[in-house]
Structures are given as C-alpha cells and as structure tokens.
Amino acid sequence: MKKIILFAACLLLMTSNSPGLNASSPDGNHDESTVNVISSPSLLKMVKEWASGYSMKNSGIIVNVSAAGPGGIKWSDTNASIFFVSNEDIEKAGEDILWKMSVGRDIFVPVVSSGNPFANELLKTGLSPIELSTVFSASERQIWGSLLGITQKSPAQGYIVNDTYTISHLASFLKTDAEKINGITLESSQELIKALENDPYGIGFCRLTDLIDMEKQELAHGVLFLPVDINNNNQLDYFEQIYSDLNSFMHGVWIGKYPKELYSNIFTASSVYPPDEPGLLFIKWILTDGQNSLAENGYATLESGEVLSKTAAIADLNSITLPGSGNGIRFGSILWILIIITAVSVIAWLIYRFTMLTVSESPAFESIHRTVFSDKSLILPKGIFIDRSHTWAFMEKDGFVRVGIDDFLQHVTGNITRIIMKNTGEKVRKGETLFTLSQNGKQLLIYSPVSGIITERNESLVSDPSIVNTSPYNEGWVYKVEPEDWLKETRLLMMGENGLTWIKNEISRLKDFLATLLNTHGEQYTRVVLQDGGEIREYLLEEMGPEAWEEFQTNFIDKGR
Picture 1 (spheres, rainbow, N blue to C red):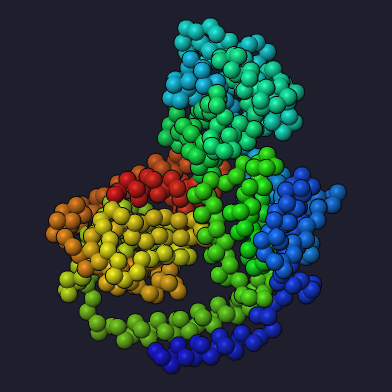
Picture 2: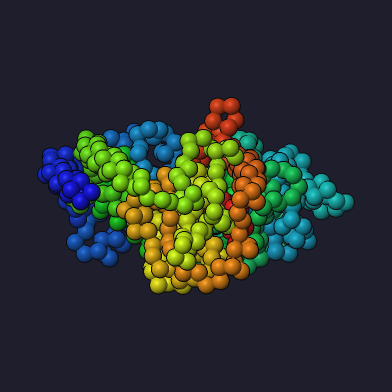
C-alpha cells in the first residue's frame, strides 16, 4: 500500500511540471493583483463603487471596471475576470456562462397600512395574484368585502410609485401589460406611506428598499407587508409564511418562497469555471463589506444566512483553483490528473479489498450503495440503530459507538463536497449539531443520535467526503463516540423492522415534499426531481438551490430532533 501511495505521489509530481498545469490567463498579461470587470451599464455606478472600496481596503490590488458595449455583454471577452449583470443578461447568455452567483436583488413589495382593520386577517390568508389584479388592473374599483369574502364595502384603492421598473414588475406579476396597470401613481415612497396613513384601506406597491428604516433594519413605521397567497387557496401555507418581519421576509426571498416576478437578481458571472482567484476574493468582499453599496444604490442586501452560504461556496471554489492558474486549470490537465488518480485509486482499492477479505466485519457495515432510489433500494443493515434525523449509531465490541448518516440521506443529497467536523475530545449531546454536510456551499446541519465524547473522527472524509455517499455504513462513518447514556438513549432510536417501516414512510413524505417544491417552483425543478415515467431521481438535491436544501433541513432533519 505504501509503495502505491508513493507511486501516485511521484506521478502527480511529474504532472505538476507539465505545461497544462502552468495555465495563465488567456492573454498572458493579467497580473494576480488585477481584477478586470465588465458591468451591465445599469450597474456600472455601483460596480465602480465596489471596485474603489475594495482597492482602498486592499493596497496594491487594482480593479479595472468597464461597461458592456452597445451590443450587450460579450461573454467571450477574455479581458474580463468576472462580469456583473442583470437577470436579463443571464437569461440571454445561455451556455456562454459556466458559473454565476447572485450578490444582491431589486425587490418589489405590496404593502398595507399598519392601521388596516384587516391586517391580522391578511396575515392568515394573504391576497392572491388574481385578487391583487382586481385592485391594480381592473377597470372598476374593488372592495374589501369581495377580496376577503366578508360583508365589508370599504374600497381597496391601489397606490403605486411612478417608476418604470416598479410598474413593469407589478405588470409581470399580474400577467398583464404595463399600460393596463391602474391605481394612484405617486412620485416617491414617502408619498406612498403618507397616502396609506390617510387611507388605511389602501394597498401600496413599491421598491422594498424605499420602505426600510436603515438604522433599525425594519420596515418603516406605518406599513406592513401584504402577504401573497401564491396558490390562491385563501390561506397562507407553510411555504408562504415569510411576512412577519423583515428578516423572515428576506430569508424567504432567498430560499424561493417569494414570487420570482417580484424581484430581480444582480449576478456576478464568469465564462470559465472556476473564476480566477483574484476575482473570487473580490466577490467574497462584495458579499460582506460590499453589501453597504447595494443599499446606498437602492438594491436589497442579502440575508445573513445567504451570505454565509455563498462565502462558503466561494471557499469551496477557491480550494480547487491552483495559485497562478488565472482562469483555472485547463481541461486537459484535469483529465490527465483524474486518469492517474482513478487508476491509482482502483489499484489501491483492489489491494485493500484483497487484504481485508479475511477480516470479519459486523453486518452493520456492509456497503449497500444502490443506483435506483426507491423504498426497495434503501436497506437498513442489521445491528444498527437509526435516528429520526437520518443518522445511525452502532456499538462496537470495545464499547465505543460509531455514527454516520443513513443511506436515505446520501441518496437525496448526492455527492458531498465537504464535511465540517468537530474535534476529538469534544462533548456532544443527542439532538445537537454533530457535523455539517456541504455541497458546493449548500449545507445540512446533522444532529447527534447519542450523547458522549468524540474519541475519533474519520480523517478520510477530510480529503474525500464523497465516501459517505459510496459507503455510508462502512468506510463513511464520521465519528467514534464514548457514549454517556447508551441504554437510555437507544430507547428513542429504531432498529430492524421499525426502522425499515420508518424509512418507507420517509420515502412517502419525500414525495409529498417534492410535490410542494414542484408546486412552488414549477418547471425549475421538474427536470431534476422526476425521471421519465414520474420516478424520483436519485441525488435530486444535487441540482437544486439552497432554498430546497433549507426546506429539506426543516422537514426531514430538524423534525427528527
């Protein structure tokens, strides 16, 4: 085994001197202390502010910013490290971009007066797009009685800030033409707030940032969010309950619970993958210190959880960029390295399996990875306890307990790219966070099935976290724990037929969960959720965004604590 590892190391050292690994930027002139940026004209002022602020904070680093020409963004422009663009630019780009990330948003909201007599009722039912269209695009003025199904004749007057983008977003949401939008137009958000103060039955529509008290980081005094009943069922379902305060709302926008017609993203993008390291560091600064410029330019900043998720994604990208590689490692070099690593790994695995054939293992640690995802393919090995948060525990002969994730979880998440683990010697409690699974910045918090002290952690997962996918009950164990109250805590865990019955029920719940996602996101997720014939795709979360991971965390991990 040592000779094989030494052989692999020699091969990798040989390839590190190959021309393909010494990749430079396309024109060969870019310095690592220079970031070259091309911006959509509409974002140019703010991007220049970012560039100036970043250069001031980082002496010696130059950020060159230029605007896209009359023909729009040219993704083949090799003079650009990264681009800053709008939703429209991204939609036109198609396959010309290999990587993108939103760094801010332009959000538009319907609001009512805090003195609205139906405010409490609206928090339960909201108003559907159809009902809002009768307020803002119908020829006759609507009354609250018909909106809420009550005997109330007070008129629901619509007020809207007279701004092209505001009106176009409302028209898109209501599926009508901008020319057909009715309502009293006002020149500023201050006038809108004053109008709602004078008319507590009115409904306003404007840009979110115009309504935020920047010092208190909450909605301005006198206005409340008007909840949107997306599926028009006269009640706010779980996935629609984001309107209680500003933080909840911003979080809801991030994870996809707000109608996409009512906001547009500001993207940073690149025509290479991954973007070069100087560009990534600039983007990371924008996600943190640079968020202030968004608010100053009338855009909404990212929610704190989203910032953490995206900075983690930047760290994951940065970890696969070689120093001095400019626009990343060339494809030929990657292919050459993968061939060598694969060949060496196969040889090492064969020798390992050969040498381990005589070793007696517990049936709890049989490899049960399957290619088809259904209740028939998910197996619970004998002898292990399963927890409702999708972890397992198995006591060894020496009295220590091995723990890891179950097969259901790895089938859903797909290939894990990073596992954030605690250190040996740390004490853990049942139901508390034990480790974090990460996939390109998207994360799941995994809770401990037992209490005790971590005596050993699986260091193999640091360099190859995907082991939890290929062998969740064997090589993919995460910790060994010295249990604190094993007998008492195992009474709360499942084993054998009880565990199998529970897992089958989880499959059924997963189908309901996916139906809700499809209802919320439509065609966006149909392709990655269902195979031909309507069967559930394996690794379905792999191609979904953080909003789906957040929902899965809430519905399948947190509920099991």
